[in-house]
Length: 32
Image 1: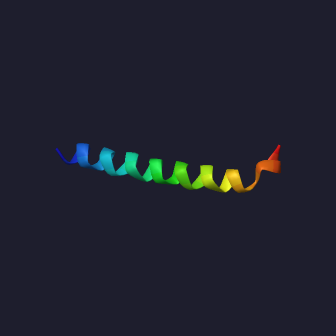
Image 2: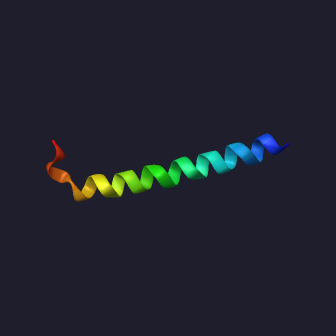
């Protein structure tokens, strides 16, 4: 079904976004 493809793309997009945010947070270690 196309729903599976949709969820796969959604998961991939979420993973990429999470990685980008993690890398940005590493640059700001003094955030705390």
